[in-house]
Image 1: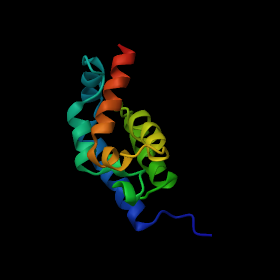
Image 2: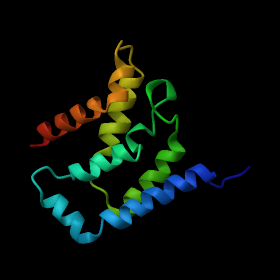
Image 3: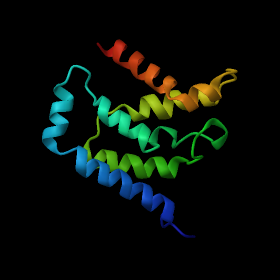
Length: 128
């Protein structure tokens, strides 16, 4: 049984690690936490540009069809840098609920990132 990460998983790890090393030193993280929003909209935009918002979704819904191993790779690196963006609640949990629903327009929502932005707004509204 091969328990090593695939080349694709290692590339994802390297990409997340590079992002975290560049954007998440202690001072930057403290500034993000002290902001009114509690996360960085710029970092969230980079998550989208890097394709990370599509990681857990099927190809039919505009995603990469990655699974729990790829999410583990990402969360391991997020955890090392104490990333505060609400990836788990906004992308993984909310997106998975939508993807597995029978909502007719789910594919368009998942592909547009509008769903993720809407979920982020809901999260922020309920925490403030």
